[in-house]
Every structure is written in C-alpha cells, then in structure tokens.
Length: 365
Image 1: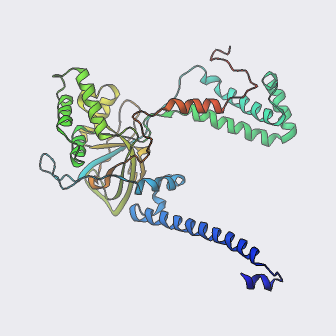
Image 2: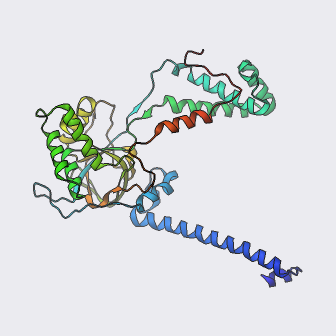
Image 3: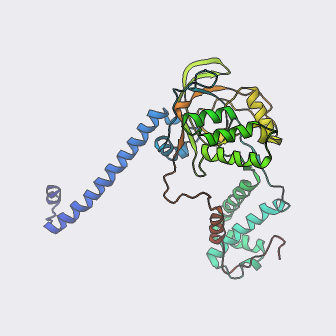
C-alpha cells in the first residue's frame, strides 16, 4: 500500500495509513463473508438438490436453501409397516392448487377504484394531498400527463391494474398444502417416536366412525394434529428418486425433488363434502401423500387438475423415501400456540392511511 501511494506521488503519514488499512480490512472481511456465503449456497444446492436450474421458481432459491439445511426431526426408517412391508417408501401424487375468487359486488368497480386511487396517490405526493379527493379524476390525470407525459401515466395505470388482477385472479386456498392418509399418519408418528398410548387411542376414535360422538372425534383429531404438526412448523422432503410413474419406468434419469408443505392428516370420519372426493381419489390410487403443486419446489412430475370439487384425471403416482421426509423445528424463541394474524392486518391498514383523507365504510358513507 505504501509503495502504491508513493509511486503516485502521495506521501502518507501513519495516521492516514491506519485509516486506509482499517477501511480495507473491513472491505476484505465483508468480501470474504460474501464469497463464502455464495459458495455455501451453491454447495448446499448441488449436494441436496442438484443443479439450481431444477427450481420452478428461481427467484426464491435463496429462501429455499434455509429449508434444506434447517434443523428438524428425522424418521426412523428401519421399522417395517404393520403389514410387514418395507417402511421406507411412500407413494406421492400432485394436484393443481385450488383458487377461489371473490364474488362481492364491489369487485366490478374495483379496477376503476384502484386506478383512480393510484393516480390520486401520485398527484398527492407531487402537489400535496389537501383536496385531492375532491378533484375530478379527469383533471388529476390531465395534470399528471402535462407534468410527466402520457407514457408515465399509462405505467401508473398498468401498476394499478396489476393490483386489481391480484385480487380478481383468485386466492390460493391450498397454498403449500399436503394431505396424508390415516395409515401414512400412523407411519409418520411411529417413525418419529410420537405414537404414544394417548395418540393411539385418538386414532382408534377417529377410525371407529359410529362408535364415538363428533365431540370425541374433534378432540381426538386435535391431539393427532398437534403431534404431527406444530402450529408454526412445516415439513420438507428432499433427495433423489427414480423416474417412474404409476409403477412404470419413464427414463434412467434420477429426479431431484424438494417439497415444502404444511401437513394435514385425513380420516374417514372427517372426510366430508369436497374433501371426501379428494380422499376417495387418494385411496383409489393408493396414494399416501397428496401434494398441491405449490408444495413442490423441485421435481414436479405431472399434476392432475382439481376444480375444488373433483379430480378429473388419474393421478401420476411415484415413490419417495421416508428418510428424506422431516419435520422442521421452530427455532424462534418467541413461538406461541396461536399466530396473531390480526396484528399483521392492522399494520397493513395503518401503513396505508393518509391523515388528510376522508374514509368511509363499504356503503360509501
């Protein structure tokens, strides 16, 4: 460093050298940490999943890496099934996520309201919010066109339309969900050492459909669900599987997979209405684990369509290993039994308020 400076005609003193060296040391430390983080991410991906190109959504790869190496409960796979068969493999299939759109009357006016609101927001930020709600929207738009141009205003309206489509395109009510059969539930609890006498009794209640009241069944299911899931945990499954479908070999390729999902056990006594159609399809195809497409981050192998009522086409069934299925542990020291979603809604509302605007209810008053 001293040589480089003197060659440039600069005669540094000791204090300047110390300051420069200190700054360069910080840069070197940060650069080293960044390089190691990149290398670690690449190694984790290639070790557990393979090429990052397998991800269906490359934007969230960094987020998914945490799930690959997070702490979790592993399964004991050396235990055979109750019928004596191999306890390592389980059968999976995929169905499309189910989306529900709102039928509220206000939806027909929502696009116009969002467009007008976005234009008034830009106008208020530029010229002040005082009286902006009383201005004719045509006058607001004309003023913005004069100052920013027609193309800029069209971009604002396109942004508002994107917000509108996010509301009208439907809400994924099964995002990241996965269903398992009663037998698969027992296998998983047993493999994790959680099939206690109380849990076994609860399972017996749920499998004895007419012997117990619905209150008994409700309490029994809650006990089992709490054992399978903690409120804030999810399951992951990652590894490689043979490229087969419905027992037939498709190719010699090894299929990398990575699933991340919330788990819902289904029993006959609670499988009613739409859920019964799903459960009947699972039993018909001998599927242990039915995954929504949003739960499969890597390794989609052909989903069947689901319209919220029925699964119209046959399922594409393949096998995965129980040893690669694990329950993630919650490491948040502030974990609670119930997630306080209400506070999040309040934050969203408060962050969108404007003090000099007038707000009313859904009737417009």
